[in-house]
Image (tube, rainbow, N blue to C red; front, side):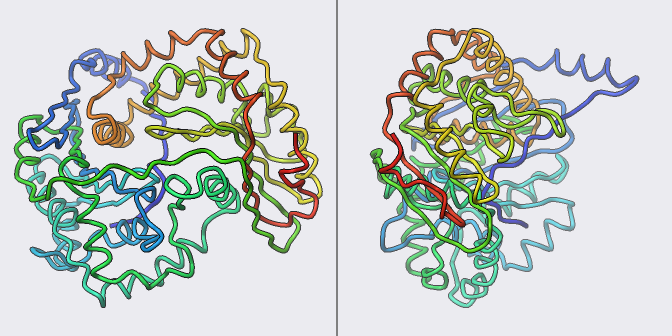
Length: 440
């Protein structure tokens, strides 16, 4: 079992020698019609696809990410995902681990600002065992106080391993949204060990209800998955997510050393406006997300203006109802300040050519198709869409939506970025990093 705060990394599959023809035939036999989505009367969404795979992946997804925390329970989502696999009403901690090991399965828990996802991966002939312990781990937690206290070392380790770049992005969210989406996916240091059993039970009961839940599967019969979802014992009637509004402000965490990481952004859009959201994502690809080859140049429309002395990338975090757009730079402290000034100037005069847009669309389309071809990331995507949207955009629909983005759409997004107010998150030696009031 494992806990992670980031989505599963995208893997690239390659056909080889005589297996290439078989791979192409299998791909041809799979179509977007294979993806099914059912909304149960209790508002729980079920999504699945059944490709020709020996391994089944099933996820229970809750809209219980860090945006749903309050001032009284900050860090509860971090504790929730870390406690996956602890003793439940029907199984002990050892029993869950041992029985999944015996069938070669795994149980993982991941989380972000909107979702907590429990996923079991197991061969199809042991699916019944996998579903049994997935249900137990995801719906029958008891949060025993002595087991929660045992998690403190693990949570502190998670916090200690956060890279400076991620800390800068977390600070950016705090500056831009304050609460809600501004809540970090990591537990604040001052709250480690302060989440009681009652606090966790209350957080679970409020956020892990049927109308805020989805069940997703890859390599599983849809009707079987519907039956599994109907058998889950979850309460109904959970409330809506905390709403957030954009703020122009900054959060700076001064540190020693000779390095700094700074994230700068303006207000973006959310997935509830798919057309505009895809235009921003294409714009991000056109602006540059780092070199595409080892030791290559960072030649994006935005990042090439930040210089070669720092590492940089365009930034476009998107959520159900909101988002950000900007850039992040990291490097030696003396160089980062100048890069931030250059980056803000580039944002204020952001303009993309037709060639930039064509390149951005190609990069976005390749990423979308690659993401949906891998079964691990496909399982996560199905759960994410079902939980947040209550419907599934099939692969062909997403590809068509990306292809329908025009140069004028992307240029309109660029104009919105150029006129937007700034939010800044910065971590490290910030002696050379300008304050927000000095950036125009």
